[in-house]
Image (cartoon, rainbow, N blue to C red; front, side):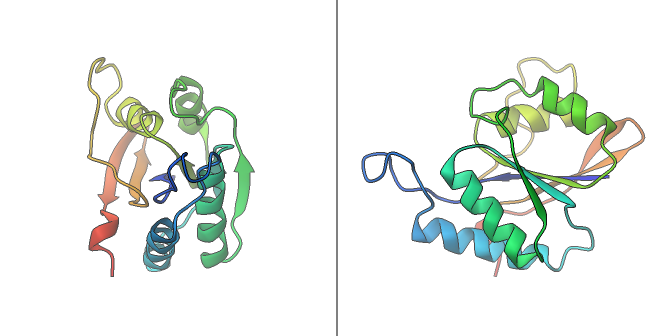
Amino acid sequence: MYIFIVQHGDALPSEVDPERPLSEKGRSQVARMAEFLQHVPVSPDIIFHSTKKRALETAQIISTVLGGIEMQTRTDLNPNDSPDAVCEELSSAERNVMIVGHMPFLQKLAVKLISPGREGVNSIVEMSNASPLIIVKRGSSFIIDSYIKNQYLQ
């Protein structure tokens, strides 16, 4: 089972639009990442995304490019939410899952999956907008399969 952890693309500042949709740069980042994911030998079966507009837009672009992947809005993927319930759910999941959300939630989720019990560790990888972190479940452990920063995607 694979888990794709993705921070939404670059968003407009709240002063420009309080809902913070994706900026043109963000749309470009997400499209580039989705095109890259077409060449990865595994793909998500479902995309979980937060209720925030920038996460929804990111999930929609990815779903469209990858052929219409099922999407599910989640209320437990907000920036300051605890990753505990999501980790528990992923531990028993059988489908490949993509999680589109926000910092610092995604950092906490990655640390909890890959390095459980290491309280105080803030980061496993320096995540950035629309840069996929792909984690694979091996037995009861999770390990990093790959990570590539969006700026390196062509």
